Image (cartoon, rainbow, N blue to C red):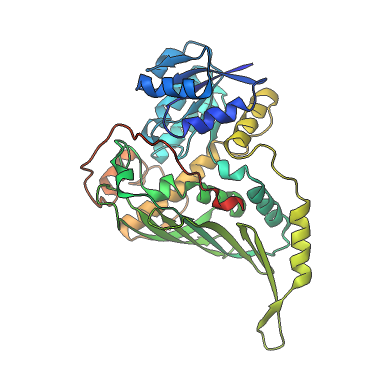
Length: 385
């Protein structure tokens, strides 16, 4: 029975707790940690975690032989907490984004390698049937080489969203919607497409004058084989439609699921290629459904890796790759430069201090609240249909 600790009792922690509770024969939550005792106790009561400890300082757990921790704290704390626990012998599942800088991400990877502990970064959108099937279809190559990818990470957040004490600053949140909302869709794109070689980006803050960070960004990408891509990240889109579209030479597939294939008439104009559409649809239909969805699926993957040595679907390097692309967007949007990858450790945007110094500060954060009474959140379910 693996002993699990939840570090941070904010809104996302409930999703982690629910995920672990789906595997009662394999793991047990023994502690919930938060600076605010009432928040931790509320989580304990809400999920019936009898016998678990309420702790305000996570370092008290470093000598208690914890097997696995979920890090659900603000981004600027991820690296220190994850490294402390890995050095103490625990495996780590850390919420997105992996860290607030590439320097911190590289430190986490180094400690994971030296300690022999597992480091997984939350990317729960991979663990859904539509996304798994989309990945399987793309891997089959039936759509042909990809020529264009479109990522629309559209969300909406009210002005007071950035009043929470750690949000809306480069120091503590590490960025805006690109880092903390589009991170899921960027991870999925990289998982399916591989990394770009260069990008050009723009960003703005159009509706949240209580935040230093962006509330919308757009990035144009070029990939090694010549494909182009477009990523739009936003918290100003009413309706919150989110999608990933892959245009192959032979067909188009997407999440939410849609397949369209065209062939040319004698004059070059399109007509439907029903046969190919049916072949791709048949392949998608035959791929298996995901049993444990979202965070529960990722927890299952981590438990399997601990118990059997099977591979992590989302490891620390995956989290680092996603962060590198996002940092590239921030650098390009702040400086106007075209960014080429990989980014080096002497880059001015490599450290948190460098980002704080060089990234565009749109507004000064003037309002701060410790907690919101309403802790409900949305997780981007639009991709699941």
